Image 1 (spheres, rainbow, N blue to C red):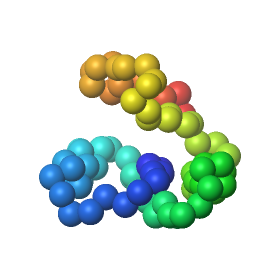
Image 2 (cartoon, rainbow, N blue to C red; image 1 turned 90 degrees about the vertical axis):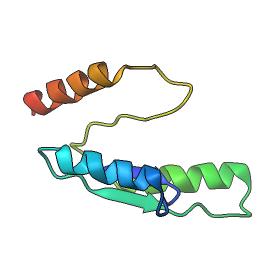
Image 3 (cartoon, rainbow, N blue to C red; image 1 turned 90 degrees about the horizontal axis):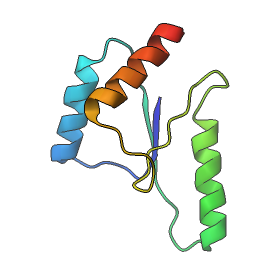
Length: 88
């Protein structure tokens, strides 16, 4: 499951996502949530966190993507996903 805040409109990025999705050997479900506007910041964060949490199963492995997080090359990320797939 790929869960994200914000909806990806028709764009080159959407086309790229679909291209990668077709290459996967497993099913990928995409869940997009429209962010609520005009909410206090803390309420918005809490609401979005609940959406993401509810989108997942208890057995799911969570990888959070954030620009401030650890950087991996494409090959390193693919290897990590392969290891996870082989474990389960």
